[in-house]
Every structure is written in structure tokens, then in C-alpha cells.
Length: 572
Figure 1 (cartoon, rainbow, N blue to C red):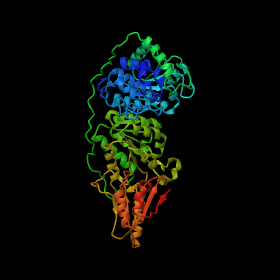
Figure 2: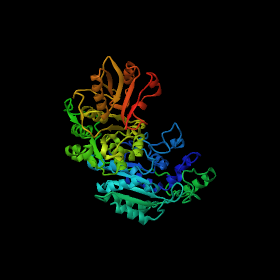
Figure 3: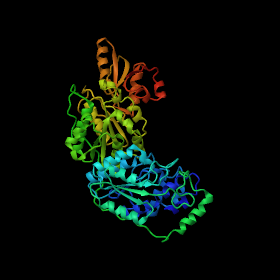
């Protein structure tokens, strides 16, 4: 592995060779002794999975796949160039990468989702390995994942801590206090081996022992040295993210070359067990139209739970996760209907999102994760990385806006629409009644990328018939006439306030057009602009969200200017 640096380190902008060198033996033993996979088919469903949580060590991942024969050694020279998929941190543009990493502390959560899926959903023999750096173990999300894995007895999961002592700017907190690492891992319920991370025989033994363990995940805590094998660089501070200087490169490579005992040896990985069928990627549909009548009263959060349970009956790929709010989000209805496909993640939202991303890899599941919409803000980095991972995950946030009233501001989601709209690949649903909620759930199950469904706590009237059709980016004009004086846009509870205002104004001889956007992203600008022009450019948005984002800012300045002045009303 280290000799691949002879190619990589010729470029001044190539970073992190020292972080790669500490993991060289770990990666070699893992990929050519412990793991089972088809080197020519990295995304084969039966392959063991690997997550490089210390994503800055991407070059060693590329090097191992070059040794396996999937990456051309000549391609390594283009590492980090704009026209090369071998980026500075790995992304799923590469077939051998399931989740993007680089924002530290997130890999183990995704690995937990993969391992949970393998053990409980797929019931397959594939195993999941996750390599972490010691520096990232200061992240709380790592320990959320550690608690999750032991609680669910994920004995098909192996975490590898590359304890190379040095962080980015100084030594990691525990440096080489291996016994503290051992005690912490064991305290979280993990089977733990402390090993010399540069001793191949010891590593082979530890990985083999991990395969024999039942009902516990295993953590291999490996004592390593940053820059191992790099003369005058090994275990020295201030080398993080720096290439090997050209005046040192020849000496380093000669030293490495002299250590090779069996030159030109061909390494072949073990093949996986063929015990898993490809995922059924056919569209998922509700088994029947929603069973509601106009005028019925139901909260959209309850309608979500009902729809999810019905969707789960229609497809075994549908799974649900929650953060100990299932009796508020109503995901408990799915749990009652499909108990074997419900994952309780407890109050650990960062890990819940990471697990959902892991569950959805290789299209093994269609995952819905729910909690209060406000609490997704804690997991925003996981959501952001999920989008970079090209993940198809559905996130459902309840108790949005000020309509939760007496519970107070800590529970009110007033930033969530801005947050999710900022995610490039995210579709944002804001259903206003039970029927549109069911259709939002069905559509999100079949929509690529991150989906966010915003649900409300209060009971509201059903305004759509069960056979009403809904589409992404197509708004519903709920009320209109030839004499409308203004266009009013509302969603969720504010749509019902707009409809109440419509009735009052109608009794006074005035008419307004009321629009339900259904999706905030994509927003149906064409319908809004068309009716805005009809009402002389008089547009009112009724919003249960902070003014920094929602319907008004969902239109571009050019779209605003096309129909003139706008009156905005923000509901706080």
C-alpha cells in the first residue's frame, strides 16, 4: 500500500499520506484476508461492506482497490484532479463506495444501518467493516452508533480504530492510551481487541476472532503510527495533510522497497457467499386509495403513520426508524403493522439519520425516519452528507411551526424548510390534509434523493377527495373565481387559515384565490405566477416558518418581478 505513494506523492496538492500509511497493514489484511467480495463487481449485493469513516485517508482506499485490480494504477496519478472521480474524500461516484465520508464521526452510524439491514432484513452472511481514526472518536455521533450497535447485537459489524496518536493540529486526546480505548469500547458493550496495527499476523488473528463472536459487535483497536514507514516523518507532528516533499521522496521509496519480502505477489480476495437476491426496484404503491371523506378531521402526522403502515403492507422493502417519538409521529402504527421492519433509534437523531442512510445503501430498503421536525437540525450534517452520498432516504418531521403552541419554542420547527430546501437533491413535501399526506408518502418512496415530509400536530379537515392526483412540483388551486382580488398561498395549517379567510371575505363580497403548493421544493412557480398576474400582482403568503425562507424566497427575483409588487405575511 505504501508503495502506491510513489505514484500519488508526485503531486504537491495530494494530501494525507501519513494518515494512509498508519492504516496500510489494516487495509491489506482486511481486503485480502478478512473480507469477502468480488473485486470486479464492488456493488454486488452479497459482498462484505466497507466504510472508510476517516475519509481523508481516501488514497489508501484507492490503493487497495488498485491492488484488487478494479482501479487502474495509472489512474492514481490523477487523484484529486477535477476530471477524476478519485476525489480527496470518497463518494459513491465510485462503485466501491456506499456512503460519502470526510465529515468525521459519521461512518459508523451508516455502517450500523448496513449491518442492521444485513442481519435483520436481508438475513445474509455479508459483514460490515468500518475504519475510524482516533481523532474522530471525540465526536458524539461515534458513541451514539456504538450504543446502537451493541443494543441490537450487531455481531456482523466490525469497527476498526486506527489509533495513530496524532490528530490534525496536535495529538489526539488519549494518544496511545490503549487501555482507555479498550475500557470505553467494552463499556459500550463491544467485544474488543487491542492489537499492534502494523503486525499482520496479529491482525489476521483479530479479524478471524471477530467472525466467531456472537451477539456483540467487535472493535479492533489498533495501535499505529502516523506516517508509518516514511523515513523521518513517522510519528512526527505537523505532517497531517501534507505530501511527501520531493527531496525526501526517493529516500522514502527506496526504504519502502527494501522492506518487501515477496515482490510482485498477486493478492486475491475471498469470494462472498451467494445468499442474497437483487433488490426488487419496482415502484411502490399504496394498496388502495386513501379512506377519507371531505370534512373528516385528522392531523397530517397521524395520516403519515397510517400511510406508512399501508405502504409497508404493500412492499417489504419499506422500513421505518424513529427517535423515541413514535407515539407522536405515529410511526408506531407502522411498528404495529410491520414490527420486524421497525427500528427504534432512541433519542439520538444524528445516529438515526446515519442508520437510515446505511439501510438504504445498495437499494436494500426504502427507509422512512421520523422525529419532531425541529430535532432534525441536530442531524443536519448527516443529512448534508446523505445528499452527497446520493442516498434515497425519507425524513419525516412532525410538530412543525407555532401550531404546537403551549409546548414552547424548543419544540417548534421554524427553520426546517430553509434547512431542507438548501440540500440540492432534496424534495420537500408540505401536505395540508390526510389525503395529500398519503400521496406524499407514496411519492417520496419512489423519488430519488433525500425527501422531507413536514407534518403538523393539530387535526385539520380533509379537503381533497380520495381519488385526487398529486405530483411533484404541481400545486393545487383550492379556491378561485373570476373576481379574485388577491392570491393567497398557504400550506399545512396555514392553508386552512387561508380557507377560513376565504369564507369570511366571500361573505363580505370579496374573493381570493387560495393555492396549496403541496411541494415547497420543487415549487410550482408557473401556477403561482399565473394566478398572481390575474390578481394584479397581489400575493399573500401565509407561513408557519421564520421569514428567512419558505414560499416567498422559493421564487427567484426574476419571477417576482414578472408580476409586480408582493405583499408578504409571515405567521410566527
